[in-house]
Every structure is written in C-alpha cells, then in structure tokens.
Length: 186
Image (cartoon, rainbow, N blue to C red; front, side, top):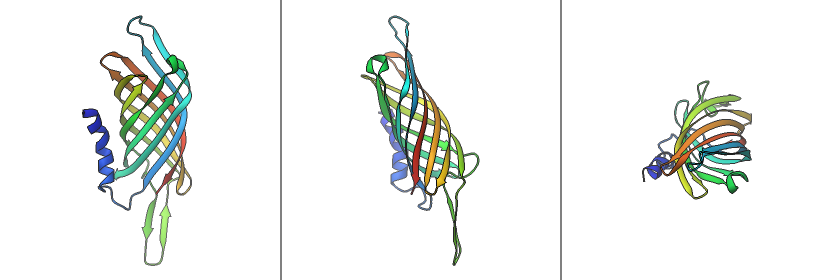
C-alpha cells in the first residue's frame, strides 16, 4: 500500500496542476545496457545477467527551480537468469546544478526570446518497484546524466543508474543501467 502511495504522489502533483503552466513538461524514451545481480539464498551462488535490453519511458515536470519530478516505467528483457524479465513503475526527483531543466522564454511587447542551455547535467534519486520473474521488489536508486538539446524542443538524454531492490523472502537485487534516448519538451 505504501509503495502505491509513494508512486502516485508525483503523478498526482503533476496532473492537478501544481506546476506552473509556463514550465516545460518532458517525455523521454530510452534504451541501453543493464546488469542485474543477486544471490541464490539456498546455495549462496551469485546470479547475474548483463546485456542490452533496458527500456525506459519517463514523464517529467519542473516543480522547483532546477528540480524536476518524474514518473516512469522501466523494462528489462534478458535471456539470462532463466529468462528474467524485470519491469515496474518508478518515481523520483532530479536536480540540475548547472541551470534550469527546460528552455526559458523572455517576452517583451514586440519580441519573444527562447533560450535553452545546450547541455543540462543532472543528478537524482528515485524509488522503484520491480516485478522480477514472479517476485516483487522495491527499492531506492541514484542516477546521473545529461540532456543535450540538439534542436528545440528535441533532446538527447544519456543516463547512468544504480538501484538496490529488496524483497523480504529473497536476496536483494542490484540493478545497474546505462541508457541513451530521445525526449521532447512540450
């Protein structure tokens, strides 16, 4: 129950309009590499899978200066760990230390100027729920990345992530991913 509540807070915040309408919303799709690792509780054997097959869909909105709230869905398709598939919802915050996370628009009587930083590095933290095979996991993670605005409103997004998920009945699951994708501001 707490998991569902934590995942829905940013979504509710974004949907009922607490973010000013002048602020950009972003949608991004990315793909990349993954590494999943856990330990078999019965044998103590390390199990893991590394490969290409991580996919992410993410919606974000600026909620404070230099801070965005995100909600997304993450998928990992692998042939390792007996055909392990991992998927689940996640929510988090990102901080942009070098500037604003979206283009700024300045207006005068006869002129409108839209200024966008080309590179937008960020760091963040997230809470994620994962369904791995038939076991549910939940945990926190950290991420760092950058957005490159190559042609407004389009951007290229590169991100590295680490998360540690747990389940009381099985060993913790470590997840490392590196994604690259495309996004749009609207």
